[in-house]
Figure 1 (cartoon, rainbow over the protein chains, first blue to last red):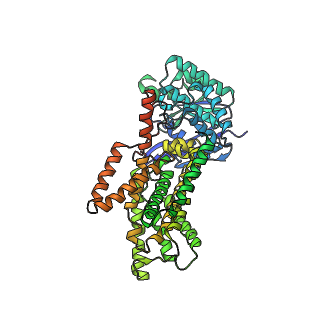
Figure 2: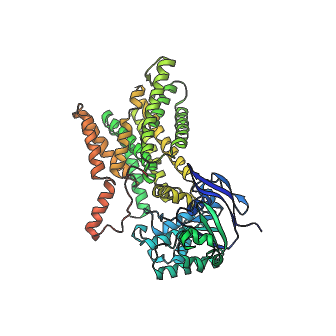
Figure 3: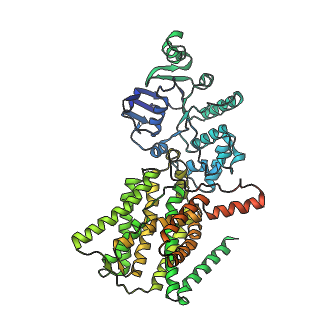
Length: 242
Length: 321
């Protein structure tokens, strides 16, 4: 079976800086994969290339066997890739509900009017924001803004969901609730690639993890195994601790 | 107020406006033409710049293209066909310019649009002097003031209808999302470039038509008249005064400002520009979000104490980062 996402020899250079260096990996349907690595290891750049925010300098990205690496972000979104951002991106002049309607109205099967409103409310219910539907997202707490962003990403009915440090900054209770939410999404069969620094969450959610360092993949396998590898420990903690 | 009442009221207002030429003498009708022209320009400007917050100073580029097309083709083609040609040229220029510039953000876009208007003026001047050997053209069309006025009134109605539709449509939502965050818009599936381009072209087409319809009023035109950058600045400040994110905002800005400018240029012809400049500064400082929103906010405060439930759209803030 063709993997959902295939990345082949993908590179990204910013001037002389090699942010991502010949990365190849494949993600199968309904996998939840953690993308780990120290700051500056190229995780977000890789996510940006998958979602089309930046174009790769070299290499190929395929979704369900179809090349997406030269498409613009809105086309990639129509193919079934949705994402959240490390620094949350809400739409401040729209209501909470309209934020979600946006993704429905311009999705693969555009919805408008009552149908869109109804489905938007469903997505808001899923993330626990249904009572805030008519408010401005600026009134929401940071955590709720992240939830809103997730609801918007889900509204575009993605096959692949990219979460960029979506769990960062949560308190322990919120973290548990949020892990539970992602588990619900997993059970619905959405394939999730998550960039995350919270190891407890990665262990709870991801059966597989990929670790990057200085732009390259240094480990890829079952999460528990990967986290014990010498190269991974060195990358995170430095030579002295290995 | 229910929708039917509003509809009837609007129809009555337009009927009264359409009957105006039967009662007004030449000067009054001239004023009405000027006002209607600026109402359309400001509304068309706000159509694009309101939701996207791209500040355009290209208004006069398109207005001038319309007027100049009429001047060149005035005695060569039937009038309705001239309007179609003018519209086609304006649309074509808008599409080319839009494709080239809508990737520019913030102040770069402002500067480019200002430069564009100047460039077109200089190109036409050069062409007229060096190729056709004329500078300035006469327009003799069998159109009376009231004919021009009626055309403008119809175009104004059309422009307001488009604005109304845009406020409720998917396309309008796309523009608001783009105005908020282009990156989020693109990742939510919105074709950002295509949407901006379509609306820029629509707005520019309307501006072109205003120039084309008004051209016969001048009888004699030359590039410095129809490509006068003051037209761009007036349009901008009118839309800002009324509030570019309200359906009737540009109208509410255009009517009083046009009358004020008329009065100023008649009574203080030597200090007109200075007063104009001071007025621009005052409007940007005092009512950055437009008079309508200011009124709404203060009324609401008096009623309920907080403005929290109001639509909090931001004014034009000089563009995106």
